[in-house]
Amino acid sequence: VEVKVTNIKASRNSRYSATESFKATVLQSFKGGLVVGKTISVVAANEEAHAVCPVNLEEGKIYILVLNKHEKSFEISRFNIAVNSENDNYKNYNQQIKVGLSQ
Image 1: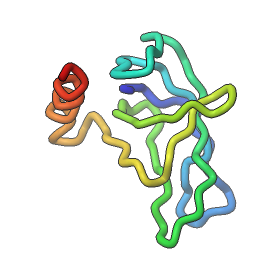
Image 2: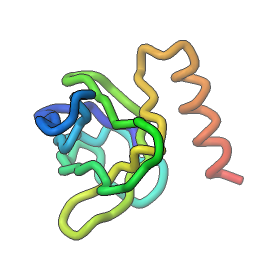
Image 3: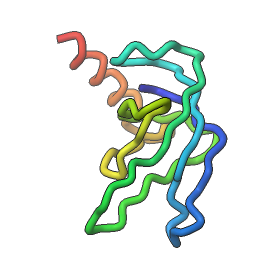
């Protein structure tokens, strides 16, 4: 899903300021039928890791994210890469996802 991130809540228990939860406005839904323009709630998955790899997002930025449905909200895994629209390969990733899903 392509989203614009808002209302970020960072963890106070982490020295890495990991994103704990946030709101996101859906800009494009590649799979799963999310409605464009809808605001969704997203929480960081409670996963044990043997390396430090917290989800760190920036308010107001646009990202391509992989989300899982979780109760009344969505969940993002610390093992997914959040691709920011300022990334040089962003447009290519966006296009590759569309091509991959159309096959």
